[in-house]
Amino acid sequence: MNLETIVKEFGLEVRCAPENLKNNVTGGYTGDLLSDVIANSREGYIWITRQVHQNIVAVASLKEHAGIILINSCEPSRETLEKASQEKIPIMVSSLSAFELTGKIYNLLGKKD
Image (cartoon, rainbow, N blue to C red; front, side):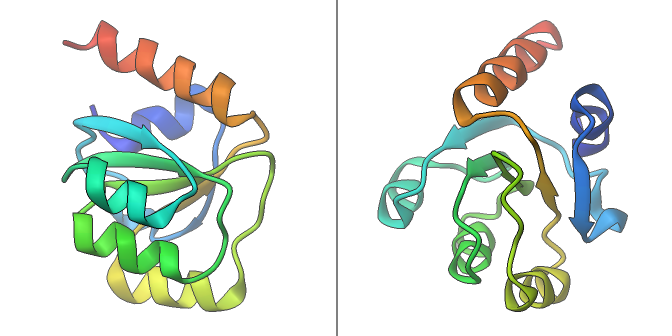
């Protein structure tokens, strides 16, 4: 499944790198502690967080994530969007909580296996 499917399914708002919504999603990780995300997420994952600073882009790039979803209508900083655009990492925003969005994406990914 790709990011575009997830964006459409949950009405996510794309903030940058829309040209990369074809990125394949192989799983997901929900967390705000950067060291935890580095240690436990994998390539191709969608990362769900409420962090908005540019360090999330560095982590997503390092781990080769498919994209980042910000929850609770959190908006990324201008610097974060600039860095994500350079790195070609899509950042999307959802009004849902981390708990709700994680469950919904988990169920959607399970249907496509």
